[in-house]
Image 1 (cartoon, rainbow, N blue to C red):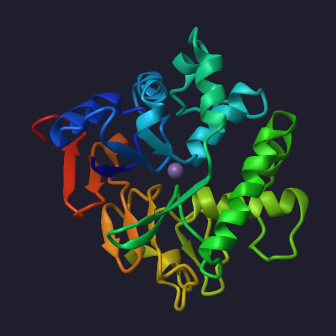
Image 2: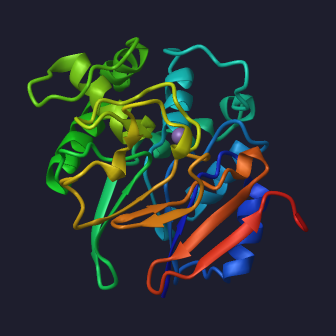
Length: 274
Ligand SMILES: [Mn+2]
């Protein structure tokens, strides 16, 4: 049995199929870790969702910002965006089953592993002052809110303009919004962890005073390995305590998988022969 961590799928069902072929994925024996953003922007979100739903026993996945956008849109709490490609999911016969399954995914998964110690799977990142225990606690708060009252508190938090920087004293909508900004949208931040929202370019072009969240000195989660995606301009990146897997398949790049047992990297181009 092997465990493969895979980057943002975003409806790239064909590259995903070829990637599984490339790695020789064995359903019922191997595991897939998915960093979230299963859907949107790409051509076949429905195909991705159906495959993942059908193989739920083989999959550990966390929610990304596009997955939450789909759920909020389906709930009538967010307007579809111009670049959304979610209509086939929303019109599917099995939509309720797919969306109920998606809504039950966690925001964070943690697991002790032989190679590389504790691993944390999250869509975007961890606040530099959060220990893994803190991060898990904040993720569980968001999950509880998703499961209550049709997710109303989460949709309210997503609608908030400009999430406040994290502080332990935050409460209610502001607290959820701040946790969501870190767990599902984080890229660069100030040295005290405030997100530099709006910047999605490569690290070298980050605005003055903003650094990748995982490069903040004395990061509280540095003893674990954080597996994440969301940052296509960062691309595949392996550094101390981090494994970044969004290599921009939906933008014509590639899907990346890493076998966690030995660190071998598998790269499947968005279009064959590219
Ligand atoms: Mn994302």
